[in-house]
Each structure stands twice: as structure tokens, then as C-alpha cells.
Image: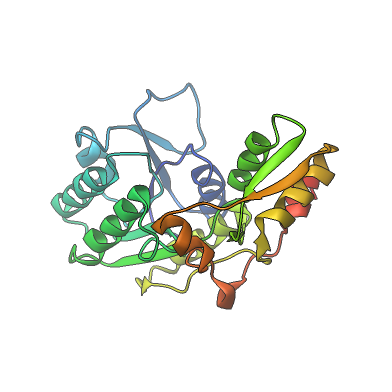
Length: 253
């Protein structure tokens, strides 16, 4: 029987396909949001705020699994601490499943450091847990390419950077699989897209798909973050598990 599952960030880029996967599998799904419930949803909408902990006790009551997808530019560590504390208070010992990012332990970027700290909190919480790290989603790479190509005639790209973009629905399917198994696995193998591409290759794919003409100009970027990315800290070459390529994503295939 599919577990009763609470999804934080269930209305976001990853949360929406994840919720669909869980519903299709017959799971009783709850979605936590700061916004009031809409008129009708195929899941149980719970209003609460991870930042101050309001509404969490009710949302977690009777839950067997929690998939933590909510994330922001700040406050992630406090939000996770509030979620863990409420999960403990529930007394139901739910399975905590967390989506993280490949390279959070190797790239000295503030947002990544917060994600790593959340991983550490979950690993030390004393409840069953699973953490999956994934590479960047196709839509994020496409958004960056759109911004960089906005002003002709050039399209600047970071010299020496490579990315391994992945389809968000494939990550959602993997998260659902981990959740529905009911088996806590700790940190599972990373999940990456099917291709590792340079920024120049990604730019050319984007320009072809959108019919734009730009001169691609590699720009060297200094600093420790750039050094880590050039070294491939953001990649999972041994786990090219994704199937849909960046070009297929842009074409809608």
C-alpha cells in the first residue's frame, strides 16, 4: 500500500511532477504551501510555513513519508530544522526524502552550503531518511541561456564550464520510487542527465532551437566557485541516468 506522503514545495518545478507520480501510484498525498487552499485539488492541501513552523504539526500528523522539495535563496536550514522538529513531534517516525544537488559538498557557493547543511541535519535526525542529489534541470539551463543570449550580437558563456542537465520529470520519478519503496537508503547514488556538455555546446544547441544568431564568446571567470565547476564538481559522469537530452527538451520531444 502506498504511504501517506507530505510534499513540501509541491507546487514548484519539481514538486508538481512528483505529486503526479505519487498520485498515480495511489499514494495519499498532502502538499504543504504558505498559500490558502484553492477551490479544488486532487490532493490534500495543507497551509503552513516552514520558516516559522506554523501549520506543520497538523500537516505531519499521520504521515508516513515526507519529501522535502521546498527551497529558496535563504532560510533553507531553518526551514529544514522546523520540518524535522515537527516530524519528531508527530511521533509517526516518517521517512524523510530530500532532493539535493550534485556538488554541494565541493562547490563553495552559499546556496550549496545550505543544501549540504540540510543533508547533515537530515542524516543526524534519528529518523529514517534518504537523500538524492541531481544535476541541474533542463529548464534552469535554458533560462540561463535565454538571459545570456538576450542582447545581440554576442552570447557570453563561462569558459571551461560543463553541465549535465536532466529532465525534471525523470528526477520526480526517481524521488517517487525512493519514497514509495518505504525503505530508507541514506544517500543514494547521484542522478545526472544523459550528456555532459560545455557551455559553448549548450549555447549552440539553444541558439539552433530558438533560431537566434549570436557569436558565442567564452569568458574566463575567477574564484573558487568557478575553479570547482571547471574541475567538474557539478557533474555525475558515472550516473548519466537521464534519458531526455537538452536538445529534445528545447524541441518539446
